[in-house]
Amino acid sequence: MKKHDLTSRSGSPGRRPATDIEELLQVALLASPDRRAQALRVLLGEEELPQAVAAMPARLPEPYLTLKEVAARLNLSASSLWRWRVPSCDLGGRPKYRLAEVEAYLSSDTFRRRAAALRAERRDQTSARKSARADLPVPNAANP
Image 1: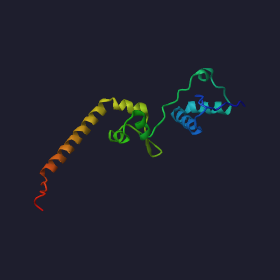
Image 2: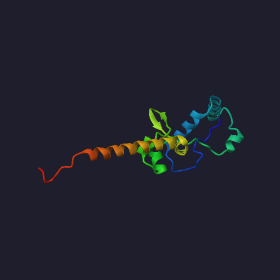
Image 3: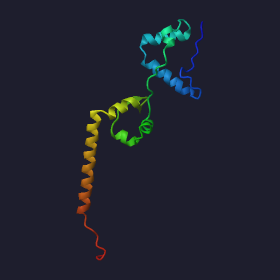
Image 4: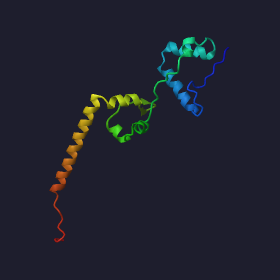
């Protein structure tokens, strides 16, 4: 049986091992059943790695991020992203986000309509608060 090197193709020596495992799991989950079976045969040494595949650069799917990570990368507030209802998917019961999907949503017409509705709602709330304050009696310091 032939042994294969399972080190990361990125060649980054300072990476933590969990990242490589997470990337491998993401690729495995997105692959077709036939592709997964072929990969398992290659890993077990039962089959050679096809030349075309061996020469290809690694193209890993974009990682899933937390809302705070997306907010930091976009230089936005996490609460704003939550309020804007950016697209997410549940992984392990927790919402995770792909940066490309969030960026596409933020440049979409759907988001523009949502942002306009939120601005109008905030404007209405502000004007209601101002009118409620105007209706309150002003305490008179001369009249105790």
